[in-house]
Image (cartoon, rainbow, N blue to C red; front, side, top):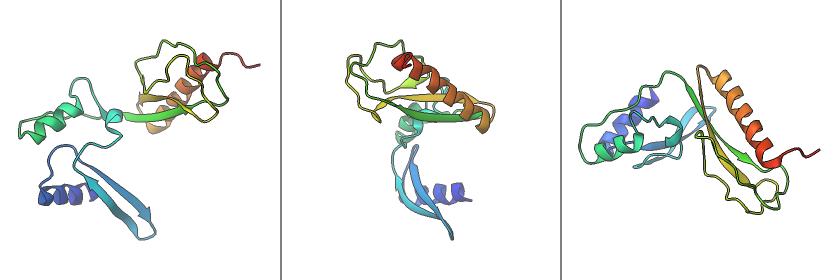
Length: 147
């Protein structure tokens, strides 16, 4: 229902490409906060190497044919944070399922962001467990044994 309503609103407003919408859920249902004529911050969660979403957005904005990825699984992203101060962030071989990396040598305080992690799995529950495991393994790389 929301998808159809938002698609109609975007068409009436003349918006093309991958737009994003922010909604909040209240006791009376969902309320639209804003609709943006650009991809949202979660674009990278849904991106696909075979059908890149930014390419689809740019092609649609230019009035050209585009291809969207087919989603058959669950996807998630998570920002990881320093649990304690780090005087000098170590050099890490970042896995391909990460982005927004801290630079080696950076001084961090507890709560500073370290990186973004992405995960894909067959269900929301399994994907949630996978991303938490990935975060724990990475945290061990930058914190080492703190015992």
